[in-house]
Image 1 (cartoon, rainbow, N blue to C red):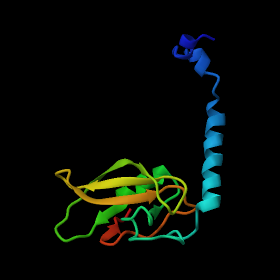
Image 2: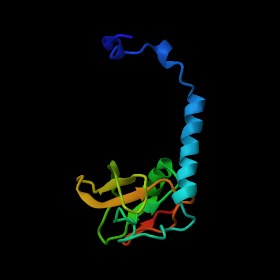
Image 3: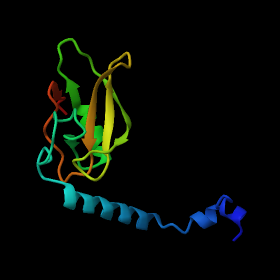
Image 4: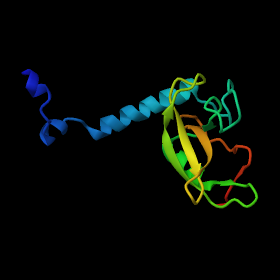
Length: 140
């Protein structure tokens, strides 16, 4: 293979060698390994630091990225006069508390102002039932 062939775009036939079932099985195995090595069955990590949910070193513990969306959709800001907010994932950051990334989300008001920044770790064994200070859960 020549140098320029390395940069040549692969055809669908070449990409079809990847078995989606194998990929999903590998991803699930990786997630289970992280959960067994670092996850807990508690609402907070035992070695946490900082305020729950507002610190990357004390993130909200959930079992998956999908559960993060469900959790954020149920979370309500109970400050008097506040209205419903939306949320936006801003990316992943590193923490000293776990080896895998912590997801960062901004909670936005109707004018798209940041109300709070929330941190979630989606590799736990169970979903935390705890909410950050000043928040509650909508029924449903």
